[in-house]
Amino acid sequence: MSSRVTFVHAADLHLDAPFAGIVAANERVGTALAEATYTAFVRIVDVCIERSAHFLIIAGDAYNTADKSLRAQLAFHKQMERLAAAGVEVFITHGNHDPANGWSAGLGLPESVHVFPADRVGRVEVVRDGELIAAVYGRSFRKAAETENLALGYRREGAEPVAIAMLHANVGSNTDYDPYAPATLADLRSAGMDYWALGHIHKQEVLARDPWIVYAGSAQGLSPKETGPHGCLVVEIAPGGAVSVEHVETAPVAWAQLSVDVSEAATLEEVRASVASACERTRADAGRNAIVRITLTGRTLAHADLVRPGVLGELAEFVRDEEAAAEPWVWLDRLEDRTAAPIDLASVRAGGDFAAELVRVADDLADDNAALETLLGEICRPIATTLSGYAPHESASEFLVRARDLALDLLMAEGGAGR
Image 1 (spheres, rainbow, N blue to C red):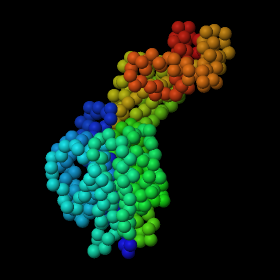
Image 2 (tube, one colour; image 1 turned 60 degrees about the vertical axis):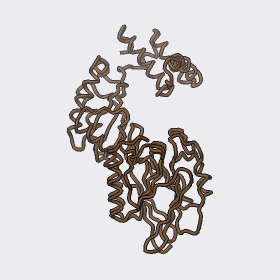
Image 3 (tube, rainbow, N blue to C red; image 1 turned 120 degrees about the horizontal axis):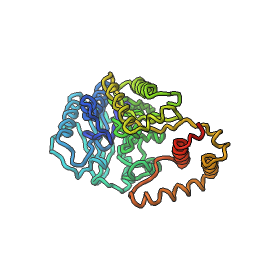
Image 4 (cartoon, rainbow, N blue to C red; image 1 turned 180 degrees about the horizontal axis):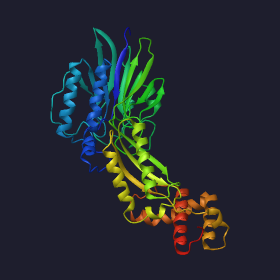
């Protein structure tokens, strides 16, 4: 190979996808969320053009559903035209969200756009100025729930200077994602490729460097779990075969989850100031619009006011309105109260009343994890039977502390113990 190969690796655009669990009544915020996946995609195309990329790889889930909206298809088509005009080829595989058997409006794509088949691994050569600079291999999902190990069908065919494979797959059995097109690193390595451009996992991650096996992550985080960077990768392969990978942020909206200790807050106004300060930190850290979920923690004198009916919701609404009006905006999606009333546990523990016995029992359970797990299982079993799919969202030790403090709060409200 006599010239450098530059391409952009993207995946999981999920055009038209909603933000999981978010209901933004604020018009400004709601509009930005509705446009976020489209904005992220336009930024990816901008990167391709600005970096003079030879081609763009979209490793599955360009769309959010098999029955993709006409708007999403028209927006996608427009960006394909932009890339064609700039001389950038595009390689696409279908994933579980946009399988090949989904609905299509039949919009004709430019000849520079290559969509890989679903019945076999396809191969397309990339030629510049009469020189073969790379070959790209790929296979699409035929249906959404693709459980076949598609990686086994990949094999480097010839003596091309650079071989790049793209695949939407769960490599390494990531339990946070559906086990579609499951494969192992050994499966991928055996194909003889120089770079594997993966999709499906929404977190950018380098699984290996010999050869390079990389998840680009999603272009825009779509749920509270998807904090951190989201964008595309600019990949350069030098004539000697050296590979460099650079992450470029494209998400117009960031996610954040914060725990705010309000132990020093004596009033609701001080709690409000702490929440506002946390929103400002989120804004500064993200450098763009952001959605934040905040959990209030600590033993605070403000606890009694926070647990009054309606107070927490009104506090969240007040802060939300202020932060949504700022630039960039921060949307306080959820404010959760995990505070407790001030208690001198040492004093309670040293007493001789029921509260002291309760604390000692909790201490014993905290020291016996097996007994604690057994107790929690017994408590949760009837709930799980009634509510299919129920699972505790906290650890056993967190449940124990919350249960102990709640019981103490009730006891103290009746008799003033430990204050």
